[in-house]
Image 1 (cartoon, rainbow, N blue to C red):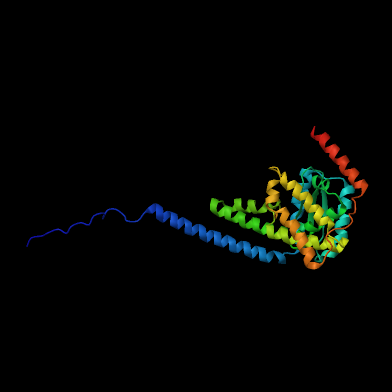
Image 2: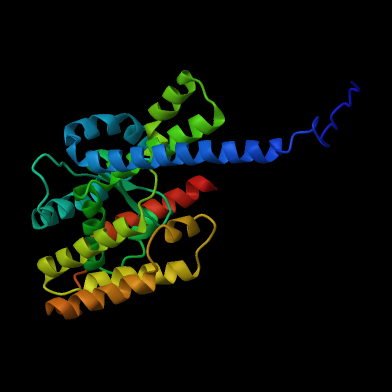
Length: 293
């Protein structure tokens, strides 16, 4: 019997699959799972943030608030007391939870900004105060920041920051110690910006408060007019702030829309910021510029 060997198929020693392609598919699948987990975790943290006791939020805020004040400098007590007094006047109009405590900080810095963070701490910078033409505009600004506190936006931003930190830790393969250190650095996470939808919600609250306090919306119009002018000449230092907020023109249109829908008066008499506050701001500016030189 004659033995005839079978013909060896071509390519038997070569894999038909592409290892690079398989690696990319596997990596994409793993990344998709990680992103899904982080998204679900972020959503859970965002939903559960409203159940976090405000007292816990306040305790968590204390260390980095003091660090922030030390870094940027504490402004004059006179201006801080004035801001605190205004905030205390309009807070009852905003249906805040009883456990929420507001603490206003005047920052003697030329930055054009105002912001709310954990524990009811609100920072108002001299650079923005100097631009405001009236107390009406200041009330609109304060109401906007207080609305962030009322709606628990700072702790939701912290939850978002934790989710991002966890994602970065997983992707970069950081150790447990590194992750703990990253999450404990709340001073960075707590100052993350708010989403545009959160800014919109704060605007709506501020406009309504302006109506309740003055019976017209002159202050909201003045505030957004200032922000519009600043956005048109935004620098590298401020452009990220404007990007995180709705378009200023849309915010102005929102004032008119809410006024029309609710029968609110859009314009009225402005109340000036007290002269002694204007004078103190001027003194602070002169001293600040002298210190720079």
